Length: 311
Ligand SMILES: C[S@@+](CC[C@H](N)C(=O)[O-])C[C@H]1O[C@@H](n2cnc3c(N)ncnc32)[C@H](O)[C@@H]1O
Image: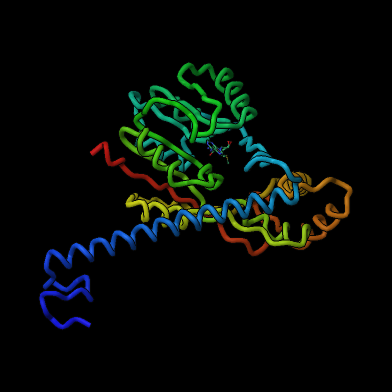
């Protein structure tokens, strides 16, 4: 209760605090901030670990974290395209003098088009297969300003660049806070993160449940990312892209193939029979391809900020 005395410690907003009391309060609020940070870090970590555990249970034991995730080989896209809403926002942060670190850049969905506008793009990714695809595409287009580092971002020793970019990769990372901190430390001008509200795993969840009989935890998305950033005292700008229908595949056979790969289901097994039955029930045709009946639209956000050392 605030007694209105100059020793009030009940209400932080009470204007009659002595320095001594304000000191205690600031310690208390520091403690609160620390607790918020710890809980955001733990909530994130628990989601990623639970997802990995659940996936490893169906794929087999003895794998390191995330090792058995299917390779993400994005379809080759025109590096000179101008109709990609995410890319168009990224381009606002890039000019012919800009050096970019594309963290988890994979096969170059964004690295290649950014290389047409930037001085240099370096992709850092632990997936050898993705980087092989990247070098094939780099050679195909004759780019000379794209390089790659075959390592996890956490261990990669790379010099700072103007922009550090991370698209659709952070939701795989168990310890996201140091990962983000490093992105900030290596960015001289801007950090840019593209994430989904709901990762593709959430579309897979109803199939997972019916095929394997257990629930699948959703990987962290934009909500958890913002919670974590705010708890880290980072207050980014957020741009929401237009929502899209989340398409699983152009036709039934490629969609089933994708679902089998994601759910570790062998064709012709009992699990495959269950998958086919649930696909009959849940898949719905749209003008873009097949989607899951009743699923949410895919919403993505570009989360960006200037690192503190650049001010
Ligand atoms: C879904 S793909 C996204 C690829 C690309 N950024 C895009 O948007 O098309 C995720 C990528 O993150 C990479 N990745 C996962 N963990 C990583 C880590 N700790 N450090 C760097 N990259 C990582 C994966 O190997 C994969 O290529």
